[in-house]
Amino acid sequence: MAFIDTSSKQSATAYSKGNPVYTVALTLVATLGGLLFGYDTAVVNGAEKSLVGFYIGDPENNSYVQNILQVISQYRAMLVIVLFVVGVIICGQILKLLGRQKGTSVSLLILVLLAVWAYFFLAKPLPQDNAAIKDTIDAVKGFVIASALIGCVIGGALSGFISKSLGRKNGLLIAAVSFLVSAIGAWKPEAFNIFGTLDVYSFVIFRIVGGIGVGIASMISPMYIAEIAPAKIRGKLVSFNQFAIIFGMLIIYFVNYFIARQGDEEWLTHTGWRWMFFSGAIPAIIFLILLFFVPETPRYLAMKGEDKKALSVLEKIAGKETAPNILKEIKGTLHEINAPWLSYGFFIIFIGIMLSVFQQFVGINVVLYYAGNIFRNMGASTDSSLLQTIIVGAVNLLFTVVAILTVDKFGRKPLMIIGSVGMAISMIALGLTFYFNKVGVLALVFMLTYTASFAMSWGPVCWVLLAEIFPNSIRGALSIAVAAQWIANWVVSLTFPMLNDSMWLTEKFNHGFAYWIYGIMGILSAIFMWKMVPETKGKTLEEIEHFWKKK
Image (cartoon, rainbow, N blue to C red):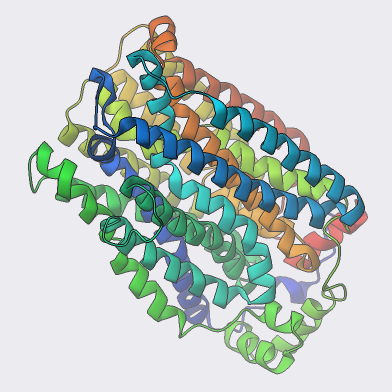
Protein backbone atom coordinates (compact mmCIF):
# COMPACT_ATOMS: atom_id res chain seq x y z
CA MET A 1 0.00 0.00 0.00
CA ALA A 2 1.64 3.27 -1.06
CA PHE A 3 0.77 6.92 -1.21
CA ILE A 4 0.26 8.69 -4.50
CA ASP A 5 2.85 11.48 -4.53
CA THR A 6 0.98 14.71 -5.15
CA SER A 7 3.50 16.96 -3.45
CA SER A 8 5.13 19.91 -5.13
CA LYS A 9 8.78 20.77 -5.01
CA GLN A 10 7.84 23.71 -2.82
CA SER A 11 6.20 21.39 -0.25
CA ALA A 12 9.29 19.25 -0.05
CA THR A 13 11.57 22.21 0.59
CA ALA A 14 9.14 24.46 2.43
CA TYR A 15 11.16 24.54 5.63
CA SER A 16 14.57 24.92 3.98
CA LYS A 17 14.90 28.63 4.87
CA GLY A 18 13.68 28.30 8.43
CA ASN A 19 15.54 28.15 11.71
CA PRO A 20 16.42 24.51 12.40
CA VAL A 21 17.88 25.37 15.81
CA TYR A 22 14.53 26.82 16.90
CA THR A 23 12.66 23.75 15.64
CA VAL A 24 15.03 21.40 17.45
CA ALA A 25 14.74 23.46 20.64
CA LEU A 26 10.94 23.18 20.59
CA THR A 27 11.29 19.46 19.91
CA LEU A 28 13.59 18.98 22.89
CA VAL A 29 11.19 20.74 25.26
CA ALA A 30 8.29 18.61 23.99
CA THR A 31 10.37 15.46 24.38
CA LEU A 32 10.72 16.16 28.11
CA GLY A 33 7.13 14.91 28.22
CA GLY A 34 8.46 11.68 26.76
CA LEU A 35 11.34 11.60 29.23
CA LEU A 36 8.89 11.88 32.14
CA PHE A 37 6.71 9.25 30.45
CA GLY A 38 9.64 6.80 30.60
CA TYR A 39 10.84 7.94 34.02
CA ASP A 40 7.42 7.71 35.66
CA THR A 41 6.41 4.36 34.21
CA ALA A 42 9.77 2.60 34.73
CA VAL A 43 10.38 3.75 38.31
CA VAL A 44 8.37 0.78 39.57
CA ASN A 45 11.02 -1.57 38.14
CA GLY A 46 13.36 -0.88 41.01
CA ALA A 47 10.65 -0.29 43.61
CA GLU A 48 8.44 -3.30 42.83
CA LYS A 49 9.89 -5.75 45.35
CA SER A 50 10.07 -3.12 48.11
CA LEU A 51 6.52 -1.91 47.50
CA VAL A 52 5.16 -5.44 47.68
CA GLY A 53 7.18 -6.12 50.83
CA PHE A 54 6.07 -2.90 52.56
CA TYR A 55 2.36 -3.00 51.72
CA ILE A 56 1.64 -6.70 51.16
CA GLY A 57 4.37 -8.90 52.59
CA ASP A 58 6.15 -11.90 51.09
CA PRO A 59 3.75 -13.86 48.85
CA GLU A 60 6.43 -16.45 48.00
CA ASN A 61 6.60 -17.56 51.65
CA ASN A 62 2.90 -16.97 52.45
CA SER A 63 3.91 -14.20 54.85
CA TYR A 64 1.66 -11.13 54.68
CA VAL A 65 1.02 -7.90 56.54
CA GLN A 66 -1.50 -8.14 59.37
CA ASN A 67 -4.32 -6.36 57.51
CA ILE A 68 -3.99 -8.43 54.34
CA LEU A 69 -7.73 -9.26 54.17
CA GLN A 70 -8.52 -5.53 54.41
CA VAL A 71 -6.00 -4.95 51.59
CA ILE A 72 -7.85 -7.54 49.49
CA SER A 73 -11.27 -6.10 50.36
CA GLN A 74 -10.30 -2.56 49.37
CA TYR A 75 -8.58 -3.90 46.26
CA ARG A 76 -11.91 -5.29 45.10
CA ALA A 77 -13.67 -1.98 45.69
CA MET A 78 -10.88 -0.02 44.00
CA LEU A 79 -10.85 -2.33 40.99
CA VAL A 80 -14.60 -1.94 40.51
CA ILE A 81 -14.34 1.86 40.75
CA VAL A 82 -11.41 1.94 38.34
CA LEU A 83 -13.10 -0.29 35.78
CA PHE A 84 -16.27 1.81 35.90
CA VAL A 85 -14.24 5.00 35.35
CA VAL A 86 -12.39 3.38 32.44
CA GLY A 87 -15.71 1.99 31.17
CA VAL A 88 -17.31 5.44 31.17
CA ILE A 89 -14.31 6.86 29.30
CA ILE A 90 -14.51 4.08 26.72
CA CYS A 91 -18.22 4.77 26.34
CA GLY A 92 -17.43 8.42 25.71
CA GLN A 93 -15.04 7.39 22.95
CA ILE A 94 -17.68 5.08 21.48
CA LEU A 95 -20.26 7.89 21.47
CA LYS A 96 -17.82 10.15 19.67
CA LEU A 97 -17.01 7.43 17.18
CA LEU A 98 -20.44 5.93 16.44
CA GLY A 99 -22.69 8.89 17.14
CA ARG A 100 -25.38 9.33 19.78
CA GLN A 101 -27.89 6.76 18.50
CA LYS A 102 -25.65 3.73 17.96
CA GLY A 103 -23.12 4.77 20.58
CA THR A 104 -25.69 5.03 23.36
CA SER A 105 -26.87 1.44 22.86
CA VAL A 106 -23.36 0.02 22.86
CA SER A 107 -22.36 2.14 25.86
CA LEU A 108 -25.36 1.06 27.92
CA LEU A 109 -24.60 -2.58 27.15
CA ILE A 110 -20.99 -2.15 28.34
CA LEU A 111 -22.07 -0.46 31.57
CA VAL A 112 -24.75 -3.09 32.29
CA LEU A 113 -22.21 -5.89 31.81
CA LEU A 114 -19.79 -4.09 34.11
CA ALA A 115 -22.51 -3.70 36.76
CA VAL A 116 -23.38 -7.42 36.60
CA TRP A 117 -19.71 -8.39 36.88
CA ALA A 118 -19.19 -5.97 39.79
CA TYR A 119 -22.15 -7.44 41.70
CA PHE A 120 -20.82 -11.01 41.56
CA PHE A 121 -17.19 -9.91 42.04
CA LEU A 122 -17.96 -7.99 45.25
CA ALA A 123 -20.31 -10.72 46.53
CA LYS A 124 -17.54 -13.32 46.60
CA PRO A 125 -16.34 -14.16 50.13
CA LEU A 126 -12.81 -13.14 51.01
CA PRO A 127 -10.22 -15.93 50.56
CA GLN A 128 -9.26 -17.80 53.73
CA ASP A 129 -6.68 -20.49 52.90
CA ASN A 130 -3.11 -19.66 51.88
CA ALA A 131 -3.47 -20.86 48.28
CA ALA A 132 -6.54 -18.69 47.63
CA ILE A 133 -4.94 -15.69 49.34
CA LYS A 134 -1.78 -16.06 47.23
CA ASP A 135 -3.75 -16.21 43.97
CA THR A 136 -5.62 -13.04 44.95
CA ILE A 137 -2.45 -11.33 46.11
CA ASP A 138 -0.86 -11.93 42.68
CA ALA A 139 -3.72 -9.87 41.25
CA VAL A 140 -3.35 -7.19 43.97
CA LYS A 141 0.37 -6.98 43.27
CA GLY A 142 -0.26 -6.44 39.57
CA PHE A 143 -2.88 -3.82 40.40
CA VAL A 144 -0.53 -1.82 42.64
CA ILE A 145 2.50 -2.06 40.35
CA ALA A 146 0.47 -1.24 37.22
CA SER A 147 -1.66 1.46 38.88
CA ALA A 148 -0.08 4.29 36.88
CA LEU A 149 -1.37 2.63 33.72
CA ILE A 150 -4.95 3.21 34.88
CA GLY A 151 -4.21 6.92 34.80
CA CYS A 152 -2.55 6.47 31.42
CA VAL A 153 -5.82 5.11 30.03
CA ILE A 154 -7.72 8.09 31.47
CA GLY A 155 -5.15 10.64 30.31
CA GLY A 156 -4.83 9.04 26.90
CA ALA A 157 -8.59 9.10 26.38
CA LEU A 158 -8.91 12.71 27.56
CA SER A 159 -5.89 13.90 25.58
CA GLY A 160 -7.90 14.32 22.38
CA PHE A 161 -10.36 16.65 24.11
CA ILE A 162 -7.58 18.48 25.93
CA SER A 163 -5.42 18.96 22.83
CA LYS A 164 -8.37 20.24 20.83
CA SER A 165 -10.07 22.42 23.45
CA LEU A 166 -7.13 23.71 25.48
CA GLY A 167 -4.30 23.33 23.01
CA ARG A 168 -1.18 21.24 22.65
CA LYS A 169 0.92 23.48 24.91
CA ASN A 170 -1.66 23.64 27.72
CA GLY A 171 -2.08 19.89 27.49
CA LEU A 172 1.64 19.47 28.16
CA LEU A 173 1.38 21.91 31.09
CA ILE A 174 -1.37 19.75 32.63
CA ALA A 175 0.85 16.69 32.16
CA ALA A 176 3.78 18.42 33.88
CA VAL A 177 1.65 19.32 36.93
CA SER A 178 0.35 15.73 37.09
CA PHE A 179 3.92 14.39 37.11
CA LEU A 180 4.88 16.73 39.95
CA VAL A 181 1.84 15.94 42.12
CA SER A 182 2.36 12.21 41.60
CA ALA A 183 6.05 12.30 42.52
CA ILE A 184 5.34 14.10 45.80
CA GLY A 185 2.25 12.06 46.68
CA ALA A 186 3.83 8.66 45.95
CA TRP A 187 6.82 9.68 48.12
CA LYS A 188 4.68 9.98 51.26
CA PRO A 189 1.23 8.53 50.47
CA GLU A 190 0.33 8.26 54.15
CA ALA A 191 1.05 11.97 54.74
CA PHE A 192 -1.13 13.03 51.80
CA ASN A 193 -3.85 10.42 52.27
CA ILE A 194 -7.03 12.47 51.90
CA PHE A 195 -8.96 9.63 50.26
CA GLY A 196 -10.13 7.57 53.23
CA THR A 197 -8.35 4.45 51.97
CA LEU A 198 -5.50 2.30 53.19
CA ASP A 199 -2.14 3.95 52.55
CA VAL A 200 -1.35 1.49 49.78
CA TYR A 201 -4.36 2.76 47.81
CA SER A 202 -3.42 6.38 48.55
CA PHE A 203 -0.19 5.44 46.78
CA VAL A 204 -2.22 3.89 43.95
CA ILE A 205 -4.27 7.09 43.53
CA PHE A 206 -1.18 9.28 43.31
CA ARG A 207 0.30 6.88 40.76
CA ILE A 208 -2.93 7.18 38.78
CA VAL A 209 -2.51 10.97 38.80
CA GLY A 210 0.99 10.54 37.38
CA GLY A 211 -0.40 8.10 34.84
CA ILE A 212 -2.87 10.75 33.67
CA GLY A 213 0.15 12.95 32.92
CA VAL A 214 1.83 10.10 31.05
CA GLY A 215 -1.31 9.42 29.03
CA ILE A 216 -1.63 13.08 28.04
CA ALA A 217 2.06 13.42 27.19
CA SER A 218 2.09 10.16 25.25
CA MET A 219 -0.30 11.67 22.71
CA ILE A 220 0.43 15.38 22.83
CA SER A 221 4.25 15.31 22.89
CA PRO A 222 4.56 13.48 19.53
CA MET A 223 1.59 15.47 18.18
CA TYR A 224 3.32 18.75 19.09
CA ILE A 225 6.53 17.64 17.39
CA ALA A 226 4.75 16.34 14.28
CA GLU A 227 2.89 19.64 13.90
CA ILE A 228 6.06 21.77 13.92
CA ALA A 229 8.40 19.44 12.04
CA PRO A 230 9.30 19.51 8.31
CA ALA A 231 8.11 16.38 6.46
CA LYS A 232 11.61 15.31 5.44
CA ILE A 233 12.81 15.01 9.06
CA ARG A 234 9.49 14.55 10.86
CA GLY A 235 10.11 10.85 11.48
CA LYS A 236 13.48 11.64 13.02
CA LEU A 237 12.15 14.44 15.23
CA VAL A 238 9.12 12.45 16.42
CA SER A 239 11.48 9.55 17.12
CA PHE A 240 13.34 11.84 19.51
CA ASN A 241 10.28 11.54 21.73
CA GLN A 242 10.77 7.78 21.94
CA PHE A 243 14.48 8.36 22.54
CA ALA A 244 13.49 10.62 25.44
CA ILE A 245 11.14 7.92 26.78
CA ILE A 246 13.94 5.36 26.77
CA PHE A 247 16.44 7.88 28.11
CA GLY A 248 14.04 8.61 30.97
CA MET A 249 13.85 4.89 31.68
CA LEU A 250 17.63 4.56 31.63
CA ILE A 251 18.02 7.53 34.01
CA ILE A 252 15.60 6.04 36.53
CA TYR A 253 17.34 2.65 36.27
CA PHE A 254 20.56 4.39 37.36
CA VAL A 255 18.73 6.40 40.03
CA ASN A 256 17.08 3.25 41.40
CA TYR A 257 20.42 1.42 41.46
CA PHE A 258 22.11 4.35 43.23
CA ILE A 259 19.32 4.57 45.83
CA ALA A 260 19.32 0.80 46.39
CA ARG A 261 23.06 0.98 47.18
CA GLN A 262 22.46 3.43 50.03
CA GLY A 263 21.13 0.83 52.46
CA ASP A 264 20.24 -2.80 53.09
CA GLU A 265 17.07 -4.66 52.05
CA GLU A 266 15.16 -3.53 55.15
CA TRP A 267 15.99 0.15 54.51
CA LEU A 268 15.00 -0.22 50.87
CA THR A 269 11.67 -1.81 51.86
CA HIS A 270 10.75 0.93 54.33
CA THR A 271 12.42 4.07 52.96
CA GLY A 272 14.45 3.63 49.79
CA TRP A 273 11.57 3.14 47.38
CA ARG A 274 10.08 6.46 48.48
CA TRP A 275 13.08 8.40 47.14
CA MET A 276 12.82 6.54 43.85
CA PHE A 277 9.39 8.05 43.28
CA PHE A 278 10.26 11.49 44.73
CA SER A 279 13.21 11.84 42.33
CA GLY A 280 10.68 12.35 39.51
CA ALA A 281 9.85 15.79 40.92
CA ILE A 282 13.13 17.21 39.55
CA PRO A 283 12.49 16.59 35.80
CA ALA A 284 8.80 17.48 36.31
CA ILE A 285 9.72 20.96 37.62
CA ILE A 286 12.20 21.52 34.76
CA PHE A 287 9.56 20.49 32.20
CA LEU A 288 6.94 22.75 33.78
CA ILE A 289 9.22 25.81 33.71
CA LEU A 290 10.41 25.32 30.11
CA LEU A 291 6.87 24.95 28.79
CA PHE A 292 6.19 28.61 29.57
CA PHE A 293 8.75 29.55 26.90
CA VAL A 294 7.43 27.51 23.93
CA PRO A 295 4.64 28.58 21.53
CA GLU A 296 1.45 26.79 20.57
CA THR A 297 1.70 24.80 17.32
CA PRO A 298 0.79 26.62 14.09
CA ARG A 299 -1.76 23.96 13.14
CA TYR A 300 -3.67 24.42 16.41
CA LEU A 301 -3.48 28.21 16.12
CA ALA A 302 -4.81 28.01 12.56
CA MET A 303 -7.61 25.72 13.72
CA LYS A 304 -8.61 28.38 16.28
CA GLY A 305 -8.50 31.15 13.66
CA GLU A 306 -5.40 32.80 15.14
CA ASP A 307 -3.68 33.14 11.77
CA LYS A 308 -1.30 35.93 12.81
CA LYS A 309 0.11 33.89 15.69
CA ALA A 310 0.31 30.80 13.46
CA LEU A 311 2.17 32.78 10.80
CA SER A 312 4.58 34.16 13.41
CA VAL A 313 5.50 30.65 14.58
CA LEU A 314 5.82 29.38 11.00
CA GLU A 315 8.14 32.26 10.10
CA LYS A 316 10.51 31.18 12.86
CA ILE A 317 10.28 27.51 11.87
CA ALA A 318 10.16 27.75 8.06
CA GLY A 319 11.25 31.26 7.12
CA LYS A 320 9.28 34.37 6.14
CA GLU A 321 9.14 33.56 2.42
CA THR A 322 7.54 30.15 2.70
CA ALA A 323 5.48 30.59 5.89
CA PRO A 324 2.39 32.07 4.12
CA ASN A 325 2.22 29.15 1.67
CA ILE A 326 2.51 26.61 4.47
CA LEU A 327 -0.21 28.37 6.44
CA LYS A 328 -2.45 28.31 3.36
CA GLU A 329 -1.84 24.58 2.96
CA ILE A 330 -2.63 23.96 6.62
CA LYS A 331 -5.84 25.99 6.48
CA GLY A 332 -6.90 24.01 3.41
CA THR A 333 -7.12 20.89 5.58
CA LEU A 334 -9.00 22.56 8.43
CA HIS A 335 -12.29 23.23 6.67
CA GLU A 336 -13.97 20.61 8.85
CA ILE A 337 -12.74 21.50 12.31
CA ASN A 338 -15.51 19.47 13.99
CA ALA A 339 -15.49 16.63 11.48
CA PRO A 340 -16.88 13.31 12.80
CA TRP A 341 -14.15 10.82 13.62
CA LEU A 342 -15.48 8.44 10.97
CA SER A 343 -15.21 11.09 8.23
CA TYR A 344 -12.38 9.09 6.68
CA GLY A 345 -13.92 5.71 7.39
CA PHE A 346 -13.29 3.20 10.15
CA PHE A 347 -10.13 1.81 8.52
CA ILE A 348 -7.90 4.63 9.77
CA ILE A 349 -9.29 4.23 13.33
CA PHE A 350 -8.71 0.48 13.11
CA ILE A 351 -5.11 0.97 11.97
CA GLY A 352 -4.44 3.34 14.87
CA ILE A 353 -5.97 1.00 17.45
CA MET A 354 -4.14 -2.09 16.20
CA LEU A 355 -0.79 -0.30 16.04
CA SER A 356 -1.29 0.64 19.69
CA VAL A 357 -2.49 -2.79 20.81
CA PHE A 358 0.30 -4.69 19.09
CA GLN A 359 2.92 -2.32 20.51
CA GLN A 360 1.88 -3.55 23.97
CA PHE A 361 0.84 -7.15 23.30
CA VAL A 362 4.36 -8.01 22.12
CA GLY A 363 5.21 -7.70 25.83
CA ILE A 364 7.70 -4.84 25.96
CA ASN A 365 6.47 -3.41 29.23
CA VAL A 366 6.81 -6.78 30.91
CA VAL A 367 10.53 -6.38 30.25
CA LEU A 368 10.62 -2.68 31.17
CA TYR A 369 8.47 -2.90 34.34
CA TYR A 370 9.33 -6.38 35.59
CA ALA A 371 12.94 -6.82 34.42
CA GLY A 372 14.14 -6.93 38.01
CA ASN A 373 11.58 -9.63 38.82
CA ILE A 374 12.59 -11.60 35.71
CA PHE A 375 16.27 -11.44 36.60
CA ARG A 376 15.49 -12.53 40.16
CA ASN A 377 13.67 -15.52 38.67
CA MET A 378 16.97 -16.26 36.95
CA GLY A 379 18.64 -16.29 40.37
CA ALA A 380 20.09 -12.74 40.52
CA SER A 381 20.25 -10.70 43.72
CA THR A 382 18.45 -7.36 44.02
CA ASP A 383 21.61 -5.33 43.23
CA SER A 384 22.55 -7.61 40.33
CA SER A 385 19.03 -7.54 38.90
CA LEU A 386 19.02 -3.72 38.96
CA LEU A 387 22.43 -3.66 37.27
CA GLN A 388 21.22 -6.05 34.56
CA THR A 389 18.17 -3.82 34.13
CA ILE A 390 20.55 -0.93 33.36
CA ILE A 391 22.08 -3.07 30.59
CA VAL A 392 18.58 -3.64 29.14
CA GLY A 393 17.96 0.12 29.29
CA ALA A 394 21.28 0.88 27.57
CA VAL A 395 20.51 -1.54 24.71
CA ASN A 396 17.03 -0.02 24.44
CA LEU A 397 18.54 3.47 24.12
CA LEU A 398 21.24 2.41 21.63
CA PHE A 399 18.82 0.78 19.21
CA THR A 400 16.34 3.63 19.55
CA VAL A 401 19.14 5.76 18.07
CA VAL A 402 19.35 3.23 15.21
CA ALA A 403 15.64 3.82 14.54
CA ILE A 404 16.07 7.60 14.63
CA LEU A 405 18.88 7.41 12.08
CA THR A 406 17.04 5.05 9.72
CA VAL A 407 13.30 5.78 9.98
CA ASP A 408 13.39 8.54 7.33
CA LYS A 409 15.81 6.58 5.15
CA PHE A 410 14.43 3.04 5.08
CA GLY A 411 10.83 3.86 5.91
CA ARG A 412 8.40 2.88 8.62
CA LYS A 413 7.16 -0.50 7.36
CA PRO A 414 10.52 -2.29 6.85
CA LEU A 415 11.71 -1.37 10.35
CA MET A 416 8.43 -2.46 11.95
CA ILE A 417 8.35 -5.84 10.17
CA ILE A 418 12.01 -6.62 10.92
CA GLY A 419 11.46 -5.67 14.55
CA SER A 420 8.37 -7.88 14.84
CA VAL A 421 10.24 -10.92 13.55
CA GLY A 422 13.17 -10.27 15.89
CA MET A 423 10.87 -9.91 18.90
CA ALA A 424 8.94 -13.08 18.05
CA ILE A 425 12.08 -15.19 17.78
CA SER A 426 13.58 -13.72 20.95
CA MET A 427 10.47 -14.15 23.10
CA ILE A 428 9.83 -17.73 22.01
CA ALA A 429 13.49 -18.54 22.67
CA LEU A 430 13.39 -16.80 26.08
CA GLY A 431 10.35 -18.87 27.04
CA LEU A 432 12.22 -22.03 26.05
CA THR A 433 15.19 -21.12 28.28
CA PHE A 434 12.82 -20.91 31.24
CA TYR A 435 10.94 -24.06 30.22
CA PHE A 436 14.13 -26.13 30.01
CA ASN A 437 15.63 -24.36 33.05
CA LYS A 438 18.59 -23.03 31.06
CA VAL A 439 18.40 -19.48 32.37
CA GLY A 440 21.59 -17.49 32.67
CA VAL A 441 23.66 -15.77 30.02
CA LEU A 442 21.57 -17.26 27.19
CA ALA A 443 18.33 -15.89 28.63
CA LEU A 444 19.94 -12.47 29.08
CA VAL A 445 21.05 -12.53 25.42
CA PHE A 446 17.51 -13.28 24.23
CA MET A 447 16.11 -10.51 26.42
CA LEU A 448 18.63 -8.07 24.96
CA THR A 449 17.90 -9.10 21.35
CA TYR A 450 14.20 -8.72 22.07
CA THR A 451 14.77 -5.25 23.53
CA ALA A 452 16.96 -4.25 20.56
CA SER A 453 14.31 -5.46 18.09
CA PHE A 454 11.59 -3.44 19.81
CA ALA A 455 13.75 -0.32 20.20
CA MET A 456 14.58 -0.14 16.49
CA SER A 457 10.97 -0.64 15.42
CA TRP A 458 7.75 -0.67 17.43
CA GLY A 459 9.11 1.61 20.14
CA PRO A 460 9.76 4.83 18.21
CA VAL A 461 8.27 4.04 14.81
CA CYS A 462 4.80 3.19 16.13
CA TRP A 463 4.59 6.68 17.65
CA VAL A 464 5.78 8.20 14.37
CA LEU A 465 2.97 6.45 12.49
CA LEU A 466 0.34 7.39 15.07
CA ALA A 467 1.42 11.04 14.94
CA GLU A 468 1.25 10.99 11.13
CA ILE A 469 -1.78 9.04 10.02
CA PHE A 470 -4.65 11.00 11.59
CA PRO A 471 -5.79 14.00 9.46
CA ASN A 472 -5.89 17.47 11.01
CA SER A 473 -9.68 17.62 11.15
CA ILE A 474 -9.95 14.38 13.16
CA ARG A 475 -6.61 14.57 14.99
CA GLY A 476 -8.53 14.14 18.24
CA ALA A 477 -9.34 10.56 17.16
CA LEU A 478 -5.73 9.77 17.99
CA SER A 479 -6.95 9.64 21.60
CA ILE A 480 -8.79 6.40 20.78
CA ALA A 481 -5.54 4.80 19.69
CA VAL A 482 -3.67 6.19 22.70
CA ALA A 483 -6.37 4.97 25.11
CA ALA A 484 -6.31 1.54 23.43
CA GLN A 485 -2.54 1.46 23.87
CA TRP A 486 -2.75 2.13 27.59
CA ILE A 487 -5.59 -0.35 28.09
CA ALA A 488 -3.46 -2.98 26.34
CA ASN A 489 -0.46 -1.96 28.45
CA TRP A 490 -2.51 -2.26 31.63
CA VAL A 491 -3.87 -5.67 30.62
CA VAL A 492 -0.37 -6.98 29.91
CA SER A 493 1.13 -5.51 33.09
CA LEU A 494 -1.80 -6.67 35.25
CA THR A 495 -1.79 -10.23 33.89
CA PHE A 496 1.96 -10.88 33.83
CA PRO A 497 2.22 -11.54 37.60
CA MET A 498 -0.76 -13.91 37.30
CA LEU A 499 0.86 -15.78 34.39
CA ASN A 500 4.40 -15.69 35.74
CA ASP A 501 3.67 -16.45 39.40
CA SER A 502 0.78 -18.90 38.98
CA MET A 503 1.70 -22.13 40.77
CA TRP A 504 -0.04 -24.27 38.12
CA LEU A 505 1.59 -22.53 35.13
CA THR A 506 4.97 -22.50 36.88
CA GLU A 507 4.69 -26.22 37.53
CA LYS A 508 3.81 -26.92 33.87
CA PHE A 509 5.97 -24.37 32.03
CA ASN A 510 8.54 -23.13 34.60
CA HIS A 511 7.85 -19.40 33.97
CA GLY A 512 8.05 -19.80 30.18
CA PHE A 513 4.35 -19.61 29.22
CA ALA A 514 3.89 -15.81 29.20
CA TYR A 515 6.85 -15.25 26.86
CA TRP A 516 5.43 -17.62 24.25
CA ILE A 517 2.23 -15.58 24.17
CA TYR A 518 4.24 -12.41 23.48
CA GLY A 519 6.19 -14.25 20.79
CA ILE A 520 2.98 -15.19 18.99
CA MET A 521 1.89 -11.55 19.16
CA GLY A 522 5.17 -10.59 17.48
CA ILE A 523 4.32 -12.86 14.55
CA LEU A 524 0.82 -11.40 14.24
CA SER A 525 2.17 -7.83 14.39
CA ALA A 526 4.50 -8.54 11.45
CA ILE A 527 1.60 -9.84 9.36
CA PHE A 528 -0.51 -6.82 10.29
CA MET A 529 2.22 -4.37 9.24
CA TRP A 530 2.88 -6.21 5.98
CA LYS A 531 -0.75 -6.44 4.89
CA MET A 532 -2.53 -3.37 6.26
CA VAL A 533 -0.36 -0.38 7.17
CA PRO A 534 0.66 2.23 4.54
CA GLU A 535 4.13 3.74 4.23
CA THR A 536 4.25 7.42 5.22
CA LYS A 537 7.94 8.22 4.71
CA GLY A 538 8.61 11.66 3.24
CA LYS A 539 4.97 12.81 3.04
CA THR A 540 3.57 15.98 4.57
CA LEU A 541 0.67 15.60 6.98
CA GLU A 542 -1.56 17.19 4.36
CA GLU A 543 -0.46 14.67 1.69
CA ILE A 544 -1.23 11.81 4.07
CA GLU A 545 -4.68 13.28 4.59
CA HIS A 546 -5.29 13.33 0.83
CA PHE A 547 -4.45 9.62 0.74
CA TRP A 548 -7.16 8.76 3.28
CA LYS A 549 -9.67 10.79 1.28
CA LYS A 550 -8.92 8.64 -1.76
CA LYS A 551 -9.47 5.51 0.32
